[in-house]
Length: 132
Length: 334
Image (cartoon, rainbow over the protein chains, first blue to last red):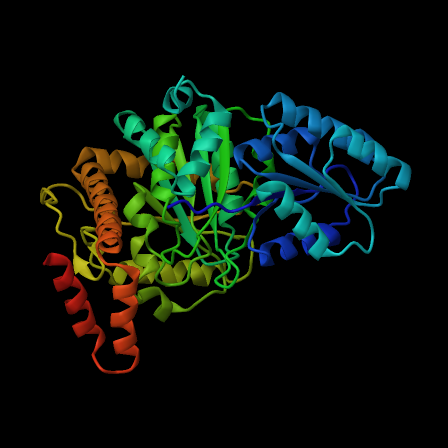
């Protein structure tokens, strides 16, 4: 009998130190029955991709409030791909302007969430993309 | 190429994916374990346990850094954190303290949740250490959940068990209780820069003075294990757990701790200690498998309807649980 759990890496790339949002999301995903690997602040794209590989996660959740998402997200996606993990879905939360939202989605980011997003929506979207 | 060949060749993605399969109890995981088993038995398994917040993860981080820098060993870390008893979810946060290790190809960190297990490890932890062992990691560090007094499973798995204490957690009566302190091969007093560190060391020292060094023959489910452990030669010196003070955030005492760990390995190897620990570990593992397969067989043989029917009688207090089990088992044997 197999017992599959959704594994999510929650990481904060870049230099801003605001991790409240990442912690709220980590907690919400935990309460939705997922296993959340929390890596903490100031992660480089390389560190995030390495952790995603070692932990064999289904989802990488990035929290970016520094405005550097257009530099960080593509780099992380590229590293995931070159590690053979193109199946890993990437979600981003933070301060993301509308025009970037479209570009991020074009790059293959699965979900983008701004201020005021509901954790229920995030949970639903993750469950749908991983199991659906 | 098969999964196990990939693992033996050092493919990290294959390793990560196999660990997931084993954790999920998938049949492919079990098949790979069968193929990998002949390649196991080389790694030194080091268990790290202690109360929540004593600094286990930071200590593991420093220890691994030391092994990388000074001894160039290949290190795997299995860090266990608890699953929620209500939702089954978990936040695994041990990596937060281990960021110094990232970017090193010879380090592999894996976080896992207990998924309902109570002894401080998860059910599949032992199997996951086997995969690391086969994959050629010289040292596998197993970090337990923040342990209370009786989460002692790690001592049945590891060759060397470190119990991490910190100042201010308990007095000398705590120190003579049975349980977690007993399983220590090495006692670590971490946060050595905090006030009260002398008192903690004193309490642990006096505990050791009161103790009669015993051969560590583990009891399983409260009964002595039916393991044929060779009697230690009377001239083999018994190991008295040393106490090492550390400040893991600064790396103080880490080289000394690594020295003690290697002394302990030498001590075990000089007598029967190493092999009797391995013997116990394998036997515990086999027993768990026997239980699981008997349980599966039981579920196959007894229909759910029959089970529910008998349980209903228990619930109505017509029969006792003991009689119920007797009925079910007899039904099975017919």
